[in-house]
Image (tube, rainbow, N blue to C red; front, side):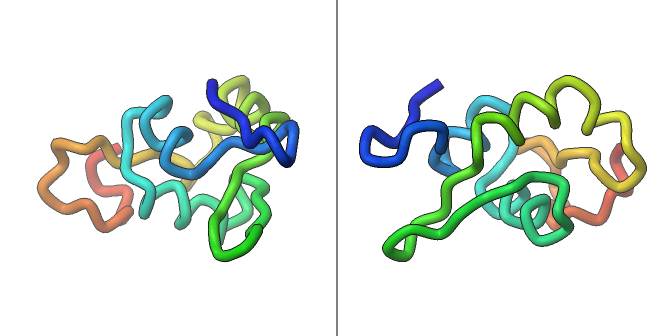
Length: 82
């Protein structure tokens, strides 16, 4: 996991997407729905490492938290493929 050197404990959204096998847009949707905690710093979004670990541990089982995979034809975060 790559963290922001200037802001320890924060992981770039793009890295979170790669680790979870989804898209940055889907990660942003999870942030909007408060399934992941994040901060915006100088126009870039970072997920807190603690939030990411909590999501991995038990967040994926919560209703509405399914991630769309990159091969999904919809890529809309609709939850229809989960």
